[in-house]
Length: 86
Image 1: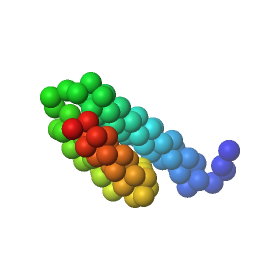
Image 2: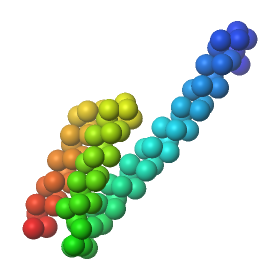
Image 3: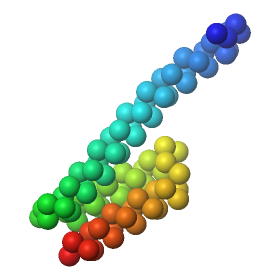
Image 4: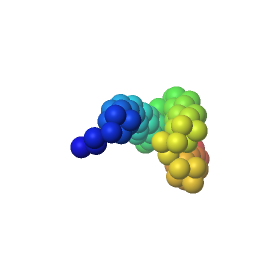
């Protein structure tokens, strides 16, 4: 445990930020899964689902939740699946 007042505050701030990041990451994973499900079930809105997932991936990348290369890879994988589904 920290003894210095600023270090104690930093621990509280990090806990709060960790919770926010976990929620955002969980939401992102859910969005990606929904897009993949829309592609696999050949839903009518699969292109919209992929576009929404790509938008959320870009936002996560901008917030520092996801590395830019990982974001690019995820978007590429979704686009590849979408194109393969026709």
